[in-house]
Length: 145
Image (cartoon, rainbow, N blue to C red):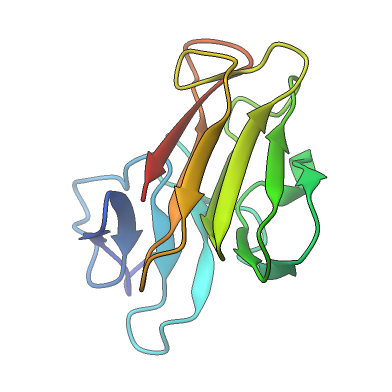
């Protein structure tokens, strides 16, 4: 991808300028077109862009599905996002919170090493990512504000 590279936004890696040919994108990087700033998707461990790159709005609590892989979920209300077991090992999505967003575990899925809930409050220009751990099935890392 000639029009992208990794930069940082909060603690979520974003991709926006020139990508060095000798360095793959980091897994879980959000990819935006350098010029148009259009969201393109999220990278897997091989540097490939996965998912549709869609930005979905959400006003009600819901469980993540494999179809959310590579998307950004923009919350328009205070909601709970539930992370189930069984998502693909390459799963990653980003969330733009509104109010307070709760990230809940379902069926024993581990979130940052535990089954307890996490919360993320809306802050100006903030987002967080939910990334599956390739080394541990049904284990996810939540990064960002």
